[in-house]
Length: 481
Ligand code: 5BU
Image 1 (cartoon, protein in one colour):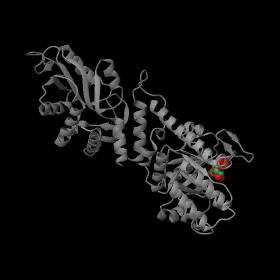
Image 2 (cartoon, helix red, strand yellow):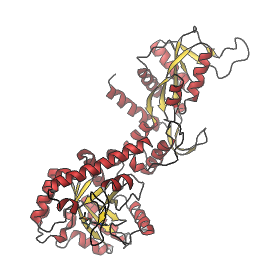
Image 3 (spheres, protein in one colour):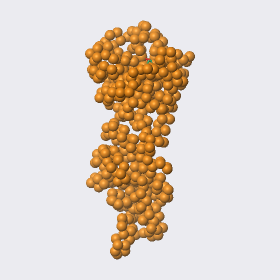
Image 4 (cartoon, protein in one colour):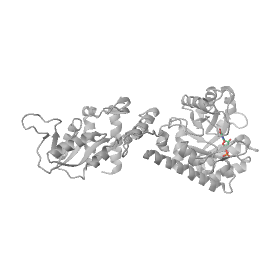
């Protein structure tokens, strides 16, 4: 069986299990007392013969190269599955009683076997591995040897490690992470639930010498750009995450030069290294329509988005005109604009009225990089709320650290240089590793660090590498946690 076709079948099975409510999301208390946002009730499979057949076939394929004389399903759900495997592949079955009968032969193991026979244990779900281990011990008491077990779902809570420590290799068809991956990609989970389940998996993941984590990793830190793209309702944020992953860059060039020739040359040189170009179109001495036409062509050539850093901050009716009209007609060419939250939601509604029909998007300025700025504390939190309420048009924030755990929101941070410091007018600089790695932002916005460098293309490349490395390291660290 080719790996990819097996993968496709597993994806289809996970979806089907969700459809038949064998996987549920909500608030559940598990047998262990742990609160879980996800619950697997695989017993319902017995009502769907097609699911039972597919499950038994996938389990069989996992152990097709193993050697064993019989199979033994752990009661109850795995019993009929083991029966299907036994019948389809002509392998004898054993049944382990939960308790000895107390009369007759008083046997714990039903079926015909000889001392030293090897047996494969079949199970539907493994968490800590205790049920498989108990079954193996009962079989062992009858001198039946168990060195392998196969399970449909590995909940990744120490089962593999516990069984391995007892000499049993566990094969699994899929893990809880696979379930999250498949169902979130298929849009079968709300973004909030994706966050909860991601945190639950990470928090409860087995660790040697440390069963439960004390530190909760932040969900954006675990999901790849492509996974986050799948969670976005706005097409532009989906596109940006996709560009970031494909071009391996989280760098936004802040092209703050004052002549259009310089602007276009700078953008063409640095284009391969950036996912977005940010403009201040009102600082150009020679603005005309040709500049934005050329810029749009460069965006297509190098595959980046255009962000006009206009910082709208007026009532809805005024921003409608500022965005669509005037000299610059920003909504005609800028994919993304930004706005202060200070006027209240009307500013977003005004921008949305113009931008949404054109497929545009907006960022809210929730924090600033300049010293002594007032965008802090409850102002920042209220800005996040405003974004939450307008998720179809607001795709994220200008901020200096991660301020929302919603993985569809983009966090974009200005004030970045390769060395921390300050300029003479209050701009404060952090490094890419501080911004992306420690503060959990997603994109670095760099102006003077690039366009004032002797070789801007090379400087852009350095920032690209530093920013992307910080992202890769952050992901790796979050996985280990
Ligand atoms: P710099 O040359 O890398 O310092 O440029 C930073 C750019 O980001 C510049 O265009 C600013 O207008 C922009 N910026 C910022 O620096 N800080 C903020 O809080 C916001 C925007 Br909002």
